[in-house]
Length: 197
Ligand code: 5GP
Image 1 (tube, helix red, strand yellow):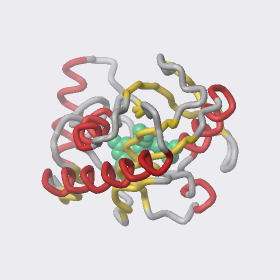
Image 2 (cartoon, rainbow, N blue to C red; image 1 turned 180 degrees about the vertical axis):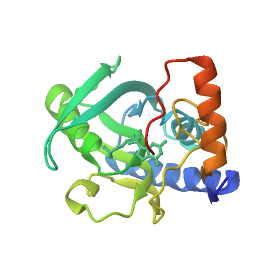
Image 3 (cartoon, rainbow, N blue to C red; image 1 turned 120 degrees about the vertical axis):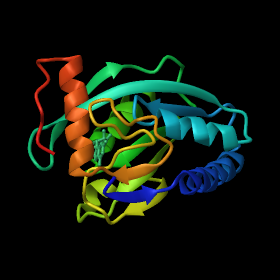
Image 4 (cartoon, rainbow, N blue to C red; image 1 turned 30 degrees about the horizontal axis):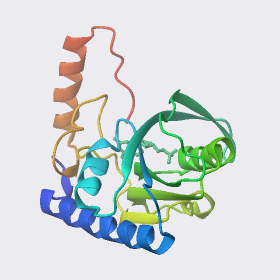
């Protein structure tokens, strides 16, 4: 590990705080069975920790998406799994692990609004990078932590080609970590191409 970003206790405290804010919002809105829509796979540990702490009756659902970046201001949303529940007229909370440029969330928010017409749509983010891209970063309604660190992070939902997602803390991996993981990935799949990071 190069640097610890969030300890296990800090992650739990962050989730409790965000869950309390969401509970308050649900009460204020008079929400009837709001939907927590977790974006797979990265948001699953975060959603599990949130839902343990939310008192308001709710249901969970999942979506899987990625985005293809066209230019700096456009992009295409690729939908791999649609939600299963009816979202029309519902209070929906998109749960996501990180906003980096914010492009994926910008496109996803627009897609859900236009396709499902929820009553309210909120965006809940565990980690938001403190980058100078305000037009995209605006899309979060509830934020766990704003991260000054610009390097790649792993743990608690964040993975390196699937590795590290279930660790209970968040950290910046060291070069040795990456080398070790590359060996595991190559052993698992000889065609694995080591990407730049
Ligand atoms: P955006 O569209 O906001 O630029 O990208 C968001 C996506 O990039 C996230 O859902 C996540 O999958 C990925 N991502 C961005 N930064 C990191 C990081 O530091 N670590 C990991 N594991 N994934 C990241």
